[in-house]
Length: 106
Image (tube, rainbow, N blue to C red; front, side, top):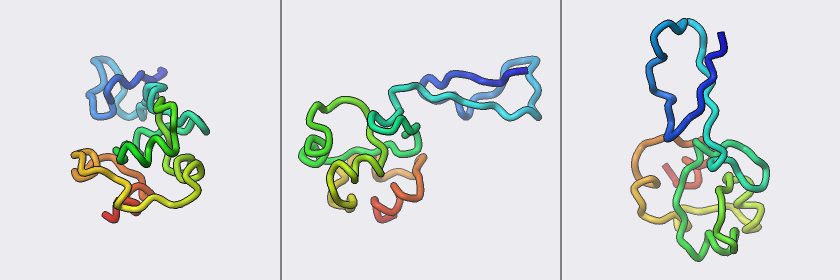
């Protein structure tokens, strides 16, 4: 039985539908809008908000998502806590990679 489901806003925490085998791990495919425009990595766990000046320097067209690695490559430097806005996504405990936590100084 294929337990693949497409993530909308994220169905990661959803309960499998009736008749599914709970012992079979569910593979979730996140929406392509969360994939890095440079390397195609799923950035679901690297959701962040930067100040516009920093973001536009790395992504002048202001389209798509960038993983931390590709963003830092485009900037030519590591991100620092000062690059991130005070947006709630940067301050609440939520999905984050170790690298994003490090850059946010959490």
